Every structure is written in C-alpha cells, then in structure tokens.
Amino acid sequence: MKNKDSKRVKKERAFFAVYIVLSVLFVVLIEILLRIAGFGIDTEPFLKVTINDVTYYRDNTFFINKYYPSSSIRVKTEEKNLFPVKKSPDSLRGFVLGGSTAQGYPYASNQSFSAFLQRALADGNAKKSPVEIVNMGYSAMSSYYVADAAKKILKYKPDFLLIYAGHNEYYGTIGAMSGRNHKSRKMYLALKEFRLFQLFDKLINAGKTSTGAKTLMNRQFAGAAYPQDEKRDTDVARNFIDNINEVAVLYGKKNIPVIIFEPVSNLFDMPPFAGKNDEKIHALIVKSLAALENGSEDEIASCRELAKHYPDNANLAYLEAVYQTREGRDSYFQLVNAKDADSIPFRARSRLTLELEKFCSASNNRRLFYIPTSRRMRNDGIIPDNDFFSDHLHFSIEGNRWIALQAAIVLQELFGLEKDKTFEIFKADKEDFYKQFPLSELDRYRVARSILSLVENEPFTSMKIPYYPKFPIDNENGIAQDTAFYQIIRDCKQDDFYLNACTYFLQNGKYIQARESALSFVTCFPANAKAHNLLSLSLDALGFDKEAQEEKKVAIYLSGKLY
Image (cartoon, rainbow, N blue to C red; front, side, top):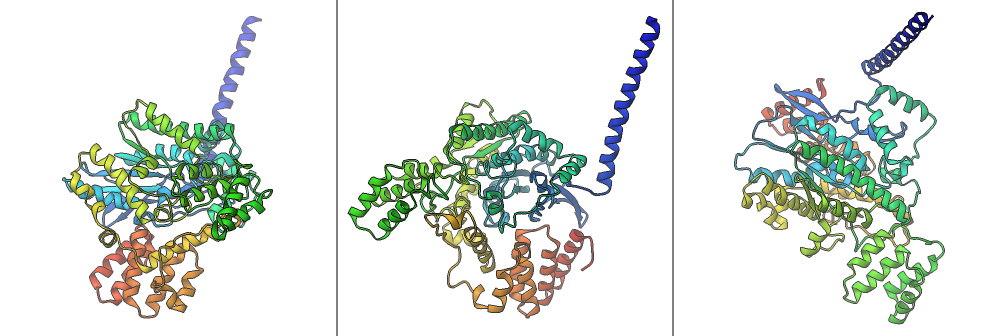
C-alpha cells in the first residue's frame, strides 16, 4: 500500500514538474513570438547603425515609452545621440540622466550644458582622445527612470554618470501621481521589460484615451494638486533617495563615479502655480498684487498685515518676499518657503533636496559626488531669476554654462585633466562664448516657441500671479519679418521645425539660409537622416559637391534608403 502511495506521489510530482516546465516554455514561446512580430516597446536605449564602415549607437526613439504607464501615450524622442560602438582605450565617455532640465530644455541637448561640458573636457584632455557626453535626459522622467536606465547604461561602458533629477517626483512618469507604492512601481518597470506584460498592460488600458493636452507638462499635470503634506512629502523624498542610492551602490561596485546635482529652480521671477485656499482669499491676493504694483505704503502695509492670517498660502508668501526685496532685505529663504508651499510642486521641495544632501553627506561611497547647487549659486552671487532660468526651472544659456562648469570642476580633478584648458571656455565673456557655441536666429526662435508653448497652457494660465518669461529673441530677430516663412514654422509640430524651415529655404532659392538651418538641424539631431539629407541638398545648391556627397551617404546609412 505504501509503495503504491509513494509511486502515486512521485507521479503527481513529476506531472506537476512537467506542467510547470511546459507552462514556462509556453510563456517564453509567446514572448519570443511577440518580439519576432515586433510587438511592443524595445526597451534598449540605443540601436546600432553602420556609417562608412564604422558602427555607431543611435537613439532608440521609442525606448522612452517604457516609462509611460498608459498605452494611449506614444512618445518619440529626438535623435540626438550618435557615438561609436567601439570605445577607444583612452576615450572618456559620460552619460547624463534626468528629466527635461538634464535634457537641456528648452534648448536642444547638443546646445546646452552637456555640449559645453563635452567641449571643456575635450580641451582639458592632454591625450586628445575622444570625449563623449551622451545625454539621456528626457521630459517628465522621474528618479524611477534614472534608477532603471542607469542599469541599462552599464553595457555602453560609461566612465562617469551625471544625474540632475528631483523636479519630476510628483508629476513625472512613474511618480507620486501614478498611485502605486514604491515597490509596485519598481515591479511595474521590471515587468515592462517583457512584451507579454506590455500586451496585458495594453489590453487593460485599451479604453483609456489621451487627454488632448497640448504639452507634456499639461498632460502630466492633469489638474492634480499636491499641497504640502509632511507624510507624503517625506515618502516622495525617501523614494527618491532610494532610487539614487540604488544607482550609487551599483556604480560604486564598478568604480564608476556618479555626480549628482541638487535640483534648483527659478525663485525670484517665478510665482507659485497655486496656493492653499487660493479661491477663498482670491480677493486678498488680487488686492496685494495691485498694491505692490501701484499702491501706497499704507495699502501695502495693510495687505501685509492681512496676509499674516494665511501663513500657508504660497502666493501671499511670494508677495511678502517681493516686499522684502524692495526693502533691500535678503528674501531668498522667504522665496524658498513660497516655492515649497506651491500646491502644484513642479519645482522640487526642500524636503527632497535636504534629504539628498543628508544622504550624500552620510554616504561612505567614495564614487558618489554631490554638487550643492543652491549654495554654490549663493556663493557666486547668482540670483535664481529669469537671467539664470528660461522658465520655472529650466536653465537659460548662462545657467547651462554655469552648471557645466560645476560638473567640469569635479571631473577635471577626477580624471586629471589640464586645469587651465578645461576651464578656458568658462572664462570667456558672453560674446566669445556664444561664438564658440553659436545659436542661429532659427535656434533662438525654436527656444522661444518652446517656452511659449509652456506658458500658454496649464498650469501657467491659471496662476493667480502671472509669470513673465524672458525670451531669448528680440525685435531684431528676422524670423517674423518673412511672413510666409513665419507662418510655416509658427504652428508646425516641433519634430518638423527644422525640416520645414530648410525645405522652405531650398524651395525659395535661399541656399545660405538653407545651409545654416540644416547645420542647426544636424547639430541638434546628428542621428536624423533627414537632417543630413537637407544639409546635402543645401551644400549641393551652393556648389560644394564633395561635401554634399558625404552628407548624402550619411543620410542613406541612417535611413537605410535612397533619397
């Protein structure tokens, strides 16, 4: 009897084992078939392309969709990176991770701090070997993206990693607004590597549609507010630190330096998006703003006294800071309080930045380097205003230049670069610096258009105290003077901006302008086949036959087709 029972148990176990193996094989087979069929998102950040017998990595323009929870959102990134697969022994290769500030927005990545830093490191490299800064900053990316992408970067042989993150922990993708807890967010990203899970995710979200928002910021905002809350803000900060620590530990084990910036924002010229009980005290905010602009000292004093009854309101706190500034007092910390009290926290709160500084100071990881951005700005006499920022938190050219310098200070010492040559470009005056990194009229208009697309939409349009950006163009910019041209590029999609501009100039026989536009196109997006093709056409029209043929070859290699 016992022998029969023993045999039966063995058979059941064997059957169960076979069942498990077959089930796993079935799942693996479906996964393989989905990949062969091209379903879902390829989650590798780069793809290979061969140009003139040299193999390069180029951006996988749909990789970023892994980090968008809803299948109704389909984002295509810019083709901004192109670097060789084979890394020479003496070359220096760094990666930048973060959100839109790390990306360089509203400037193109290759016209912002990562480009300035690449030049500085190249100038200081006595070996004259290649220096590559690969910018993987993308709009709305939170620290969950940073932690996940950092693991992927290792296969591309980084010598160092730069992180600028922290502003997207509430509204960014896989952030506080996603509704999941920390562990489930991590699990979600891990599972999304598999096409089968992507299929389930798509089916679950099949009924969801896009909000119709005009900008990514508008879409991520979706009317949600997060007033200051000790527990929630602490949880957000701790999750952020957990993600950063994951990267620091991983890279520390491989002896790869990680440089992380404290995220900073526009304080002086950027009012809060919203404050606690704004609707209830709307009349007082309006009255206080009017008094500040045109009122008497008695009216201002009266408004300030009334505002004391609402110490938690961000707008009244901001106006108090403006009063203090007019009185010649240091209003910096009052402005920080106003920023922290903002109920729409697109700007990182002090709870997060203080936790970051505390974490980095306490860390015994010798490959983790912290840059206390706000303290250094104060020490250098830099005011966080519209001269340093393009909007609420993205840097102007001067801001990008200064941020590049801070990274260069750390990297120059780490890699033993020549000090004088590394910092030479940062010592140049504005005019000389702009000559080294020229922005065409078209580039500047593109930047201005990007800023305008933000401030003409929510949450900017609902601000109780309006924000007035400082645009990087003036009346001398000739774009608007050509009415036909202006109409073509004013309302076109951002992806078609340089394409439409170059095409217009070629069709109208303006070949010098066409070449200038095409050069901007190639500078911003060197892996874009259309950019090289348009440069080829403009060079050919100007009689530069050899150069035109070279650009034509690059376009064919990148596109895989004849033009």
